[in-house]
Image: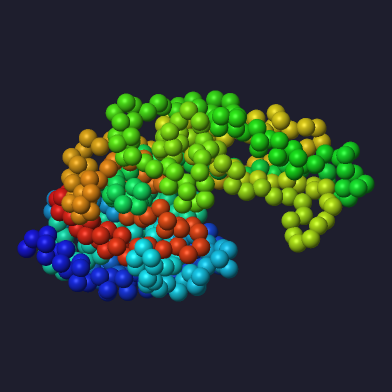
Length: 456
């Protein structure tokens, strides 16, 4: 039987595949909130049952946090591992959703049909594209063309605290020739892509304390130190007027773009005006001597994700606050050392602290950037398979986000990661009204079927 028979089976079974995805989307598997622990267990159980139904020997493995789902299917040819995550982001602010985020539906929009619901794109919909490709292949051929391991995580959206220990303890079981990761997207929502560069991630929470209680700003204003003013001065100093980050030694380990890669990226004809215009902006705000694609893919960042203190409720309260707090995240590239950057950042904050103020820090993750070399013939084979399905030449691209699992596959298992995804820029992942295009879901399943053939 040919690949055409598998593709035809995918086409005919699409309604049933969407029904299965909707079932999974109804489970509110929010990993960061302990109130949803049982729902994360239910999502893991759902996947165990679905994979076992395909003949994959699958188990739910306990961790100190949410469970891992691990399944194995024997076969000839190369050993492929597929990674995805079944947990989702919180849905707040709920009032901005047009419908219950865990009552998913198929909706007709001006851009076509979409699957609306939390996790539809990140990452349940993408995860199911691979499973559905395997389902169709097995239905047609009776078996899959390679040895397969499924490795599905339940803590990706909450920092993956159990992931590294689990991988280290089960390294021999999880080793494979290629690790397939489906948690990325199409370039400019239309070009299939294999991501070869991912930025690392570092998070820091800062609390500055001045007076030991909130003060009346009439009685103490002008004479007492205001932690919010101190915090604002520190945060404002993190960038210079040209968008460069001012933390000492911050750019240590940041490589320059090669001429070859720069030419490839220029060939993509990235339209930053449209990219920014779609979110109501017009001017790139990063390092002014860099192109917009460099800013997103190959340059590090420092972003203030939240700042609070004092009275923030309705009305007005003339309070001089005791504390000010902020969250700052860094996207890292090349050989930047997140732990060194953490120490340099904290020292910079302490050095700027005036008398009568104290500071405390909380760290949130620290992962290095990762890069995948594409000399392995599997990459050209997968790129051709994607090009054939989408009828657009597939590209090797960078990604502004951070997917630490890619680096863990390299460093812990010695396995080459291959990142292929079918999300679109306007999927609103992590935001209200998240969606996944039905076309992306459908063609994603077909793409994985083609890649399975190409890699085996």
